[in-house]
Length: 225
Image (cartoon, rainbow, N blue to C red):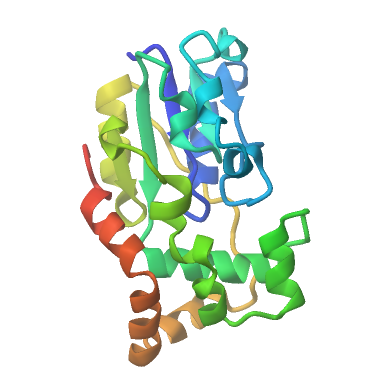
């Protein structure tokens, strides 16, 4: 059993369900939720302070004393100096993740996120949303920018969570059961998603826009599982 588990919750990749399963297995007192960094928010220090990661060394993690799990929206390099640790995350096929994120944000209350506000204010289409640089490179240029992905012990696939959970059990001896949470608030979401996925020309356009993240996903998703 590792000293601590570092779990990067990539938005719209079952992270909320995984976080609840971790809390059920380890208990609330053993969890540290790190959602303040929010790498997708361009105004956060993780994006504005060039020395942000240099401020963390092996002596910087006193706030984790007594904790066994870190879970949330944070850049992996924040905890790079923390060792030994078991590092895990889950990725979703980029176009499917994009669709889920887009429709979720369309009906999510404003929460002081400039990209969310911009999307709503300008009534962006799915394609226009995908053209925003930080959306287009959500994996390769935001959540895992400048990350040596080999630091991860397991990178799960959203579409094969059973395999990921089996690997997690082998490493920790903790059996996790994922609840169904954070359902998309868009009415007829499944129908709308399937309409897009079945539109060949539209999918080709979206895959071209997300080509770098698709290559990233195909290379790393399933690693260690």
